[in-house]
Amino acid sequence: MAAEPQKDLAGAAQPAAETGSGKMVMAMGAVGSIAAVLIVFTFQFTLPIIEANKAEYLDKSVYQVMSGATTKKAYAVDAAGQLQALADENDPAAQYYFCYNAEQKLVGIVVKASGQGFQDVIRLIYGYDPDQQKVVGMKVLQSTETPGLGDKIEKDPVFLANFQALDVTFTPGGTSLSHPLELVKSGEKNQPWQISAITGATVSSRAVHKILSESSKADLPLLVQFLSQQTGE
Image (cartoon, rainbow, N blue to C red; front, side, top):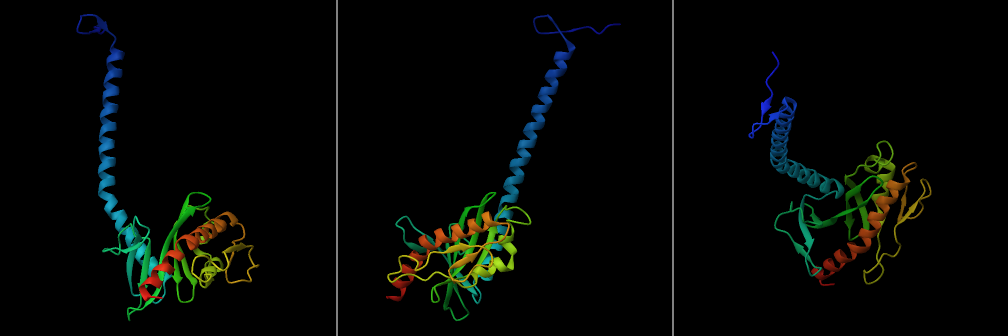
């Protein structure tokens, strides 16, 4: 016996296929709603864990970059362009970390910096020694550069050696560098303000050079001025 066609509210015949399609759409909508709720819940649940891991990694990286430091104090630039100490050293708003040894003597300042790489934004920190006027360490915190090439900026020992004593001496008055940072081909470095590029990863090397160049021009004069005010010089 043939199935009796379904009828709508007005009594008109309604094809069975149309009814099945409507149920499928409703089911898909319900599944989509449940999935959206689960995504939001997972994000909210994991976000504090992710942020805590980032803070822990940053904390370890600061002490790796600034050898000899045992404590740090976070600073940020306020609306007036002045440095202000932050109550929480793990405050994400921090831009600078003043690092001290066991005798509470300032050994250097770790600076956050970022810029566009080949694939995406590169985020890094570098250590600045105001007494020597040198960059004394650099560590990439976030990068999606090409594996095997661009990612060498994170781990290549020859490239990282560029930042163990990189000259950032200021002119009298502390407003500009005596020698702007310069990127040179691998093996051609002969000046302390030069950065030797990684062969095969010139774009990523150039990105790090640009990040440090812009930061040294913008951040370091501010730090030098702040330190001069603190010491009364």
